[in-house]
Length: 409
Image (tube, rainbow, N blue to C red; front, top):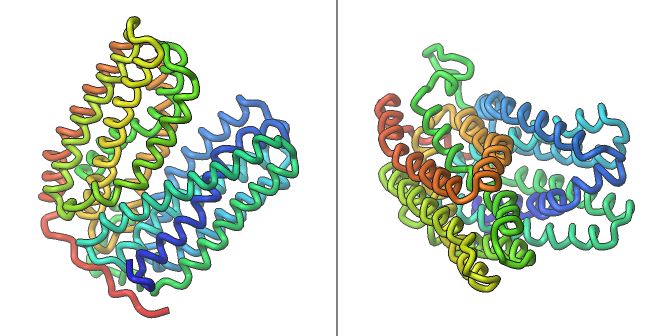
């Protein structure tokens, strides 16, 4: 990337906050339980409520980014996230914790939508998927570094250690805001002569259908973080350390190959083709995961099968990501990118909220047949994306025009 390119700046901002996110993901649960004094049930309930509210807030906050300008909205929401994280350092009651967690989820969901709108304003359409692939690689790198820092806090298991790393997360979002502020200004979308619904995306049924299908494919997110670890310890002869090894494999794989996987995904047809292939590859990974329960494999045989399944899952994940990024932009009207990205982004908290329950019931309780059912669902969702996306394109009628030209800060 050129030294002063907008993508480089966006990547630097992504790295700043993803290091903090890695710390947060690793340490927050134990901090809330051991330092704040909450029960696991209280933490789980608060997380569900907070991400549900955050998902609903993503659309209006994305629409606000369209109307007010995505750069300013991104900066404010990054600072809002920092304030929410830093408030975790002082909350000691459940009500205060819930309020802070809701503020964190709302700011995070709004920031995701606003940053997508900002990227659309500073990166030409043909390069957006490639740019998002670079950002995803940067995200994984930051998460890996942050998880390592969080691991040090877990090893020492002290109140001071937890406070220090959570403060680092808050500082990371402040740095993210400062970097985003240095990007060019993307003017707000001018008021349109034709009266439109305030949140038009909610009435765009074809786009809603595309978002739902993408949310189904996003069930692969809790697959690696929850279902596969439980599967390994309850249904296979593989050693427990494999859970960590597969996570590292996935993280490094995305860092190394996501940009390459996104090459050529520069239009609607290429995007639907890539998503269709991802459904087939995810089906294959589910079949191989199911085979790891074979009684005659032994520990090392199970390790080999699980690694092969994880590699297939990694390929399907990268294909699904590349295709969905292109779809989310190609099918969004140019003057409503923020709110459309906000709605499309609700698939992530939805998968994280519903996924654990669905995957635990399917895979841990039902076993091998559950893997086959899950694989068939992935295949069907990937195959359905093409017809649904074509319907969304036809409903939109004309290609999205370019967003307003970015101005120098």
